[in-house]
Image (cartoon, rainbow, N blue to C red; front, side):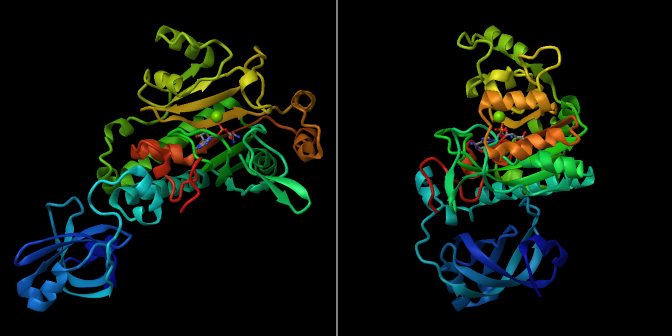
Length: 430
Ligand code: 4AD
Ligand code: MG
């Protein structure tokens, strides 16, 4: 019977065959412990000389790291490992013997590992981070599908910018100029007017010269957009969505969180509602904490966000930022036009902003005025203005950065380990 490590619990006491790679091994005179992985999981195979015979046992002892093989044996319960099962190996067939696998069990530097990312992905921790990423994506589709959202895919090649022009990747589109999408938001607003509640999930690109643990050049964003929804209602969606994602990972990725030594007690507390603090109060809080460099009207940097987050044990919404430092499309506060109806959601433990969201301007005249102020008078933005002309409604939306969320939940330090093949300031390989 051919099966996978993920399925072995169904075959206790039975003989099965698994296609696997040898991750590591330990052996003594009469017994060899083979650490097997097959993509679906990690399991120990126990090879005993008395069972295999002299020749085959010598072959087992000589197996090299990352050799590929078909292993056959009986599955037994193993209460010592958290996986819970192991295989009593009765035979194996080598598919290919791998020689001198570059990533050995010893410590390697980050640059070396990043140069071997195509192989590094096989290792236990990297595998765990990717499984958590996969679970976050699964839980995202689940949440939005169950709540009546339609998935809409905005374009990646665009003629306009959504979040300012300084960080755009430029390319030629035959005779025209085009840009790689920084955010699907403007198109998602059009989609919300067609389908009510929508969400997107796709790659976005920012030519940011930032070399921090939170910045990627290519990253993936989940962007919901809701018609007939104000900013306060959008915050409720955000906290429910993030809570759903966290609780799903806690339920479905236990072995992965354990492989990463993630302290899950901090994650267990992450349930809606989340605290809110206004930008004004956040500035005051920072001053009280001894940050003398921050003045009202300035944007927060990473150390500021971390200091604010430290005052709460859940993610915190910082609301109503000054209009000056936010995007052109955000709706002004009805009583204070110098601030906008927006919020950034700051994750705990120093992971920074994971969501940026706002209520959008729905008034045609005000949007026309913003176009003037921001010099958006070209043809590229004509369609976006028409959304305010034909049946405009109050609407809100947000964007969750997938990699920062994966980093936070997995507890890995840097976003470069949260995407299979990271694109960084100095890295396009592999
Ligand atoms: O705050 P941002 O720029 O918001 C937008 O793009 C809005 N148009 C979203 C919307 O309302 N539909 O980006 C949203 C999130 C950030 O909170 C952050 O998590 C992530 O995207 N992000 C990045 N992640 C990794 N590397 C980068 N360079 C990122 N820039 C933003
Ligand atoms: Mg932002």
